[in-house]
Every structure is written in C-alpha cells, then in structure tokens.
Length: 130
Image (cartoon, rainbow, N blue to C red; front, side, top):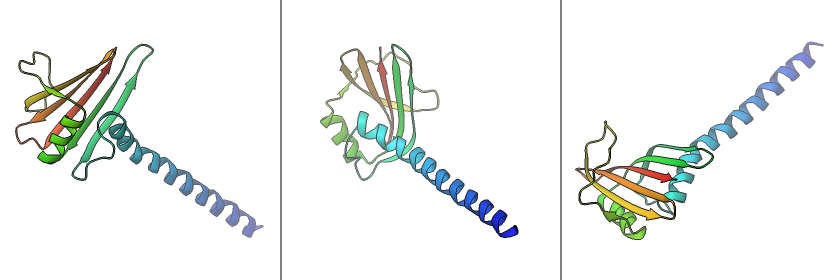
C-alpha cells in the first residue's frame, strides 16, 4: 500500500516538473518570437531582449520590445527594415527612457517606432496596428 502511494506521489511530481519546464520554455521563447516577427530574423548576435509584450484587441494591437544592441547591429536593423529617422518627433516617449533618436516605419494600418538612447545601444520598439 505504501509503495503505491509513493509511486503515485512521485509520478505526480515528475509530471508537474515536465509541465513546468514546458511552460517555462514557452515563456522564455516568446520574446524571441516577437523580435523575429516584428524587428529582425535572425536576431543579431549582440541583441539582448530585456522585455517584450503584445497586447491585442478586436480592432487594434500593439507590440513593445525593449532590447540592448551594439551600434552596428542597430544600424543593420534600421537599414534592413527601412526605418527612417524622424526629424521633429512630437509624440510621447517612455518616461524612463532618455531618448535621443526616433525612427519610424509605416505600413498598411500600422506604424512602428524604434526609440534609441544616446549611446545607441539601448532601444525600445513600439508597433501599433489601428
């Protein structure tokens, strides 16, 4: 009787560990998936994704990705996606972010921005679909 209980409890523990590992794997891979989909695929080697989220509604959605990148990879991303530098950006930037340059890419019913700090190694990506 005791062996059955030990077996059942240990089996449940192993199953819980497997499920937890799969959930963790999905959570950790989601920021990379968003980066590849909205910014660059493959992800440049210097990129370190700090935060990524996607919010969606019936008629609109947004994607926000915060990342570190070296200057050469940033230039490559901006060139390959055809972002253009905004001369007189009048919109809001994240309050915590000391933004020095803003780049924009417009599409069908959408707009994307990359806000870049003074060192050009820290960036915030924002995608808005309306």
